[in-house]
Length: 336
Image (cartoon, rainbow, N blue to C red):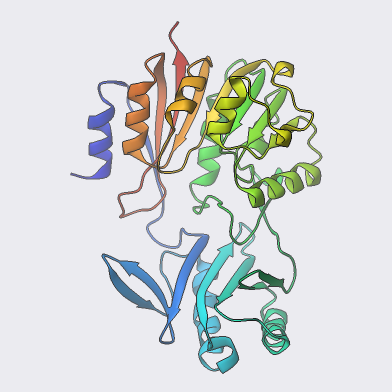
């Protein structure tokens, strides 16, 4: 049974309307790829077996093109090869690239010079990482463009960013379409601000929360670069946000006060583990819940716990074709 039928069967007791499904191209759709390096090849694991690669057909075309060149440079230089552990690629909507080489050794000036030469020839940003060390030939930040290029959005080489550029614009448009009578927004798991930035045009004020330090730094950089003045953010986990609503204080909130907000919506975009019980109890108090999920199983489990709300809309996004992964965007509205 395929993932679409399984999801439809599981959600049928909660939602009976037609569900729109968005399909990605089957190749060339990944703008973020991570590989191991072993025996002169890129390495991925599938079914507990190593896959030896020189390029990767699921990667964005600009990543596919450069992978063999980077691999050849590494394989023909002992300084580049020695104790190289991982090679990561990121691309953006302008086909610009960030490449990260991760080592299990101290990085010396010789290695830096080699990387600088490659970076100049290819006109790409290359990062070197080892324990407690980071070097970049251009910048530690990588910029992309979202919502018809309305916003510049920043990411680092190790923070989460939506990996499918074909699906992301549709996902943003769907989230925007689910907003009705906006006042203020609470966002949990905001990441680098992929949805926060476009939603700033709709809401009076936004309080965005995220536990990852690098993601918050990226969001702050994007807020400044895009001249946005209605987004406040704090480095808090979802369970800490729940505790905040129960009266606990956090110095990380600074001058931000919950009493200054009139929340009409909450947006949650949790990891595959879904929402914890504390978070579910808090968001039950919100009239509108926009729930973005990357795991149908935990999504259904959470929906069963949110008895205070009815599902008003569901849309699916096949971010990773030919896999079991499925992205869900839905709107839940309070029944009482």
